[in-house]
Length: 152
Image (cartoon, rainbow, N blue to C red; front, side):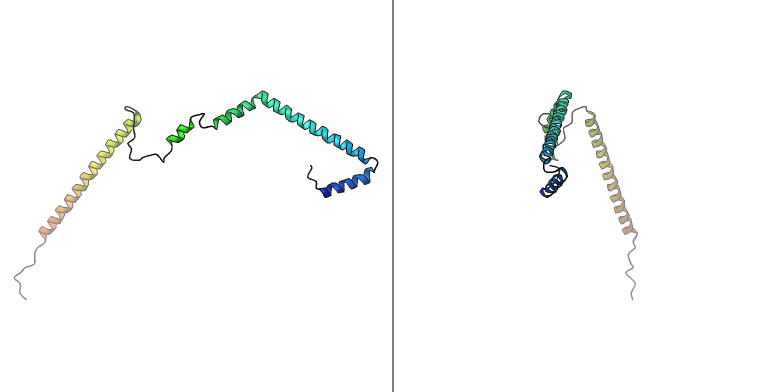
């Protein structure tokens, strides 16, 4: 009850027998028992009063609401989970944007910018290749062949 083992209770009983005496020992145990019973009754009454006060304040209703919020089907969270399931996502699917939405406008602008960047980079690469080919051709024309009539 109070964390006392059997050996400790025997020691307490022997000390009580010596201090109180054998005649008064049953009266003392009865008094201690009544006191423990009253303490338990007061604790039960206090617990009931606290539960009644909590019921009046609506704690059970709030607890029920919180439990309901944790239910995904009640609040439509199952659709959110379904929408965020990336196992079903196909990266090759084109994203569908509403016509005229700001997201669609930004996507179009970005696509046009990307197309321009690709065109400019392709043109610059071709110009570089042309310059390199012209330089090789000029180098080949300026290289003088060795004279053939020199005999040793």
